[in-house]
Figure (cartoon, helix red, strand yellow):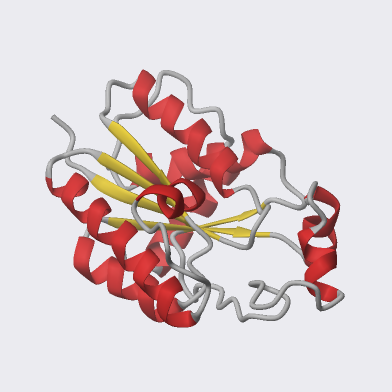
Amino acid sequence: MPKGFTLWFTGLSASGKTTLAERVRDILLERGMKVEVLDGDVVRQNLSKGLGFSKEDRDINIRRIGFVCSLLTRNDVVAIGAAISPYKAIRDENRKLIGRFVEVYCKCDLETLKQRDPKGLYQKAIDGEIENFTGVSDPYEPPDNPEVVVDTANEDIDTCVGRIIATLEQLTYIPAGDGRGYSDDEEESIKQRLRDLGYI
């Protein structure tokens, strides 16, 4: 049976974390793996109800998600965390706690995020109507060396999902699929990134 691991999506609000997490979950389920998605918004409603958006409360929320991911991982479940998780130190803390940890940075520019935002939260934050809004009035610290970077402003969902799945295959965290769905150049690019990070 494949070992568990944590796939951690980080990025600003509306950068595509939940959409990509759900697509990856569906592929892994098709390959016979046990998978759970811990979405930041859902966790806040259940596991972290009552927490606010101060740095301390954000850190508590991300530590809680990380703790649940660690329990799932050690029981051979693929735990997919999808939360803004704005601070590098807490993401690194979770990496150390979990061990088998793959970070996916959903990179997206502010203009695209504003266009995608149906509730207009970014504009409200820019106008000063919302305080402590990550990426506008509160910091977001991009990861230094994520295993995967997906540019969700310029790459379609299939391309992003393909890169994530290919990376997990290269790491031998998941069984290979029947058809790769990515080119030799893309495969070499993924291998080179993993070499640079010291995986292969």
